[in-house]
Image (cartoon, rainbow, N blue to C red; front, side):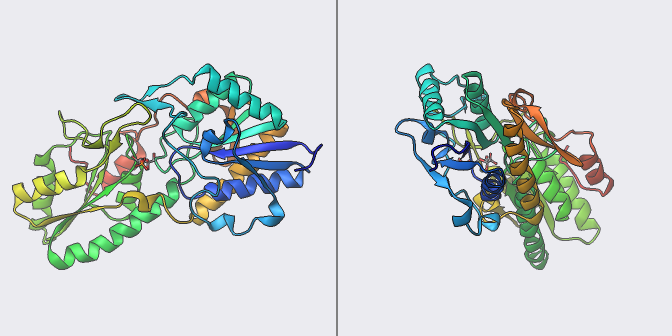
Length: 364
Ligand code: F6P
């Protein structure tokens, strides 16, 4: 690393998603164009702690990042930097020693700015680092698309494309066998992936956390389709959806160092449908396929815009801010505007209305 060049840092935190490497590439390249150098911290925020795990990111030596899935820096959504824990996702305050250690690393490496790429949890950490005096800038990431203050996070479009492709495939097999097929998708406590892929992929019933469902309604829709001569039905179930008056279906309860793990709703729904309608039903859990692989062209573009804008924010000393998409532009917003409150699918909004206009049932 050069002795006197301005230097910035970047890290990726929380669950991975398509496009993280595209952001890293854009940041490194935009910094290089300004004559700055970039270091990347490994393993999310953990890389900041002594002895500090980092590497120089030399643009001339990087290749293929724009299309590569995952993150070359590694990431983590649990451990000492877990921002949210407990049943209701309480915010953890970082220990003063951890904040001081992270700050010492930033100082020792003479960081002009530190770009933290993450979702709600990771940006909650970023805000705490900023309040402790580290010159932080945020980039909003998550397939869940549940962050406030930006119209879209990167990774979301790639996840929706993956789920839509799965629905296309499930359609043909569902129709061949006259079955009900339930696709369980991710999204945590927001239904953005389910409603977007559900409409794009021609789903018949979409279950989202924002609209509690009733089996009577789901089965009525299936019977209505039968009467119309449609002997198969596609159900898209967001992992965080719940029956009216019921609870979340979880794989693992929350722990001290991580949030609750959702999953299993699809199987519950498929079983109940089969019991009530007598129709053969199957479930497909898309799981981490939604997070793997490279970004779509939409996400590549968004990541590149976000990365370039984040470097600009450092140049403008807009610390404590996050880049956000406010079409047609990318803008800077205080990180505090993005965290602490999840952005949910509006139940009377355009997406749900579009679905209802087409006869899609939301199970209510
Ligand atoms: O927040 C992204 C996400 O993929 C959620 O949609 C999902 O509930 C969760 O992460 C899964 O986390 P993990 O990879 O720890 O199982």
